[in-house]
Image 1 (tube, protein in one colour):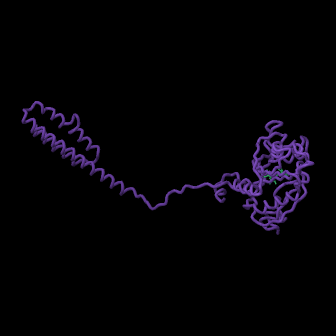
Image 2 (cartoon, rainbow, N blue to C red):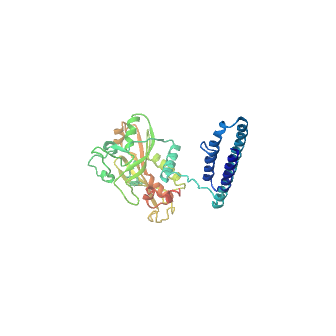
Image 3 (spheres, rainbow, N blue to C red):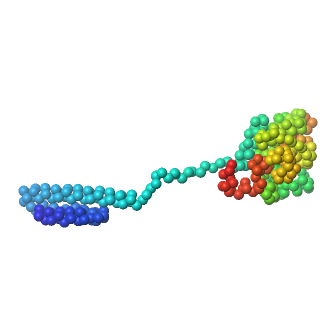
Length: 340
Ligand code: FA5
């Protein structure tokens, strides 16, 4: 039996030495040392040998098993090492290449301008109120002194959900909504930023855009307060000293009403393409709150007065950043947005 064991060992050793991959090594291992392997099967015959012969043969058998196992392990390590070297020679990793940068986003220019506008008014003691974008005809028009057949409705054609409910065309409906909560005594000093909707669509008019409404109500509020507040606001948002002028205008909910123009932020009033060579830019509508609207909100127009204004955030942002097409704000083009 010892002879046979030695033969198996010699044959196995040769196969191990010649093995060029892990699979053939595994095969030798199973064939010689596995549960049905040649050595395992042969050693089962030990029990039929005489006692002294059994001990000697068993010892030799174990030594051969251990030697083969060790040889196989060494060969496995050798093959693995060789595979690794080939792989490394083939794959060239340049560890000096910079990693992929994670691009960080930034605030949309309209959010940026809206935040700046809010900060300026908060600095002047205003609070922020927000209202529904889907609005009753009553608050959007009727309560603002614009009855059903009033021609002023033509300027603000909207998207109707039913005869009485529409997408608000301006932030002014919040005037009466706020007054209903604060009347008849409490002074009001609020701004209302938000989305509004109109049937408009061109380079300077979008079907959805953003406005900021302002409303101040108290005893003895005058047009002087309106002028001072809006000049301070305009100079801060455009970060320069400005000339201001008020042109008479008409809004059914203010009396008197005015459009506020500022000296062109681009040419400082000399005349350029931005201001159509007039030197002036229209930036908002404003006026003293119409007594009828104060009454609709629950205030006594004999006791309090107020001023209100409404501006378009897109318009301010276009002037501030020199953008000539409002649609750029909504195209989602990263080349545009990444500039802010
Ligand atoms: C109003 O909407 C009044 N509610 C403003 C007001 C409030 C007056 C309180 C008096 C007292 P007007 O329709 O002019 O007014 O719109 C105000 C601003 O919104 C405009 O100056 C303009 O900058 C902006 N705007 C109007 N339509 C669009 C549009 N389709 N797309 C973008 N901006 C617009």
